[in-house]
Image 1: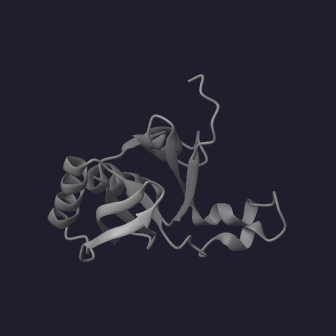
Image 2 (image 1 turned 135 degrees about the vertical axis):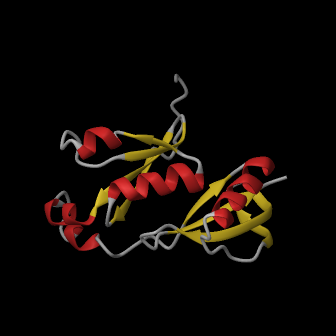
Length: 142
């Protein structure tokens, strides 16, 4: 990639069981798991899942929080989740995500319409939680 404009590289999510979390994101959300085998073998600190060619979600185990010392107070971030992460999807992928979540009895919110976001007003959106309580919004722009 030669374009150097600002982009979102990754989001770190605190999870109780990174392997189970990767399974959820693969099967319910449809994301590609990364480094799960390496994590299970003790060769990686955490697995990830790929949102797109440029963005991943790192699935950090909660015990890792005690080693977070890059800034004062970072260890206290475990358990203090981001309000939510929003996924922008094409219409067919948006519908497929909701269907997969419902098939797995993952609670989803009602649809909202015309919510403002990075690309203007979204046609539809809904919210769901992963097994660790992280909240996601899925949205579809026209």
